[in-house]
Image (cartoon, rainbow, N blue to C red; front, side, top):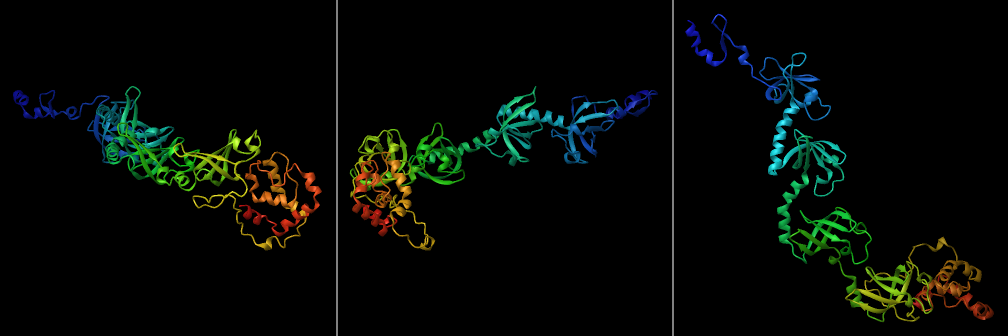
Length: 489
């Protein structure tokens, strides 16, 4: 009988065992799995409470997952993380706590599994996927089963202004730093994007050649220029290639998102860099100068800058010439600001045109009264033109009688301007002098910008009563000085 019991095939199934009397009894302990602390087990969610979750792992008692061990997220709702009937992996933290419970951790099981996958990805260079769960100072936190940090500078190829737009999105990144002792994982999405665009960039480099004109979008603006997105690759427009005229900052000419046509200036295929030009797609104002003007011509312009050695005058948009201090007036000039100021409209004579160096030498003192002024090569409005304010005559009423005192009051601002531009001694406040100043022509003569009646002869002007009377009558016919302006021009 004892031999029959020993040879019973049911003993091989591991469900039965031999009792004290030699009879077969159920082996309940053999039906339970052997588990050890630190081991990852598989189970099914049987209950979800607000502070814990019960898991059936086939052990003699159900395992308990505290809410803090559910996820690497902070302050989670258990119902949002798991549901009844869901199968999960959990790490055994304690086989029996003080209350005899089996304590499990879902997040630590994920950590162990995820860490192995991350280590493998770091070695092979393969990307990993993770969902953005937090926006922190300096970057993003991704849930990889492990908290992975994605620095802001590595989120995209270009700097991202608002990181909040990535919250909740799943991103594909490369592992660039891994430290198990500190549980530190640093990621780079930029590396993935660059790999994806590498083939595209090579195709763009193969397609483009210097001299090609292409269309792109301004992707970034920096102090030294602007970057243009050419459908997958950025090219640089240096600040010197933005405009034919001087540009202080690229933002004066361009804005991010603007679509532009640019010319390919140079391609460095080894370094994968493209140099672009914006001004090359626009008409060159210097070509207009060479076609329309020549040395000896008198042209009109506006003073753009006054420096110690002279003044720069813009004769066309993007074309400036230098009036050297020695060419400002016939008399000695200590400071160019004694003769001209920034913004003044002037007539200048072209002394030299250096087409190769794109430089103009101009003279103010050599412009004489009666010289013909060349029309603007760009067809623009004269810089001497009086702006049309489109005001009705009813606003001012009837014109007052032309008296010397009235004329002096009306022409006070021009008189003050002559005093500032001249040698410091303004002309007599007579109607004829003020009308001449308003014409703007005498400012460009070789005497440094003084009016026709000089300040050195006030006594002579007062002695000649008849001449003064004629001067008083003159503005009565042309009170605004417009006719005098047109005649002088």
